[in-house]
Length: 70
Image (cartoon, rainbow, N blue to C red; front, top):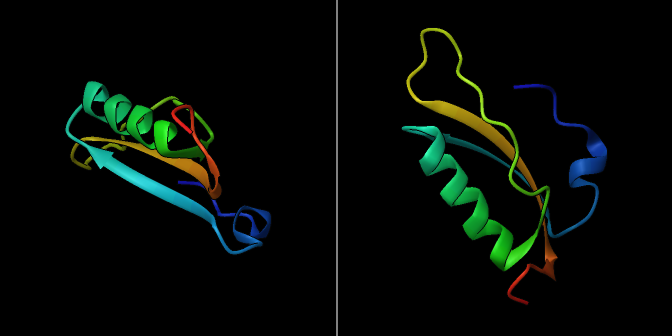
């Protein structure tokens, strides 16, 4: 995963979530669920790291703002 920039956590309520899941479908389900609760970077592309289990994705979220169900 790439470096987390200071701007991504510059204020209370801003978070960066690194998710590891068994497969892409599970990762997409998690991203969609988070998007319903909070403003997020949305459903992002997932990737595999050689020698590491599962797939990985990084999500940026603003817990101060409601998501699509807000």
